[in-house]
Image 1: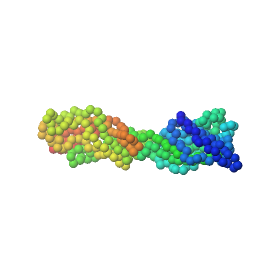
Image 2: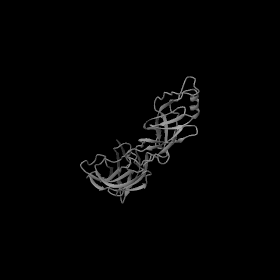
Image 3: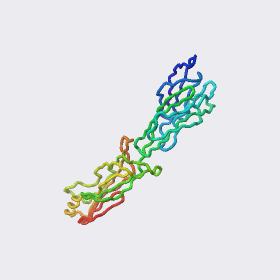
Image 4: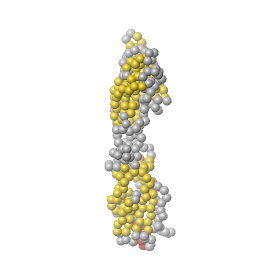
Length: 312
């Protein structure tokens, strides 16, 4: 728990001096609500302002209306509520929406434990179905009869990962490899999530092989692992092509060496990085890729699917 006691300014009101006490208490992690200007005392010399014990949340869930902060003006000596006050939005958020309301609860500073107060409350709802950012910020001012206090807030949501991907064969490229197009699958709880603008990258998913085409003295190295690739995610959550299989030159070489029929397989682990990420993160399962050929055909394989063509 982090507690901050604000300045205690002497403020002139009418013909007498007020000593305003401003107490801020955070009970749910680091406070990102910050005073951005001096408060102005306008009312009772005995009034103070305090936060609700259940407020000051910064790590939130997506798409859920969440209480961010709540304040009330009251008199400590009598526990009498002066005013719930009200909020005004100064700077709107980019990835969500702010709303205001009234809630009931206890004071975070522990004062008046037997009294339930009514607080002016600010809420936030993350609305963006993408990972363009995992943080959002906004500013608002809370005003009561005795105080006018600006705050700025930062909220954070979890980054969303694909549940997996589907794969579709499209065509053969000029070098003889199968071209496969993938579509990222959003999680079931967020079926409209948009991963476009993110980047996917393949990594070795484990040991591969055997490469039954290879032999000692071969002009080609053993083909038992992915070669590495990075692709942007396009609109529609599409990425690719993933080029999988044997080059036509290698097919002809091994045929001439009497190695056909032969082939290989190898595991592929897919990772993804969004603008909100510092590093790539795994998604989906381990996919098996590979290729094989006979003296008349060539086959490309990806994630349980395969495509065969004639190649004399």
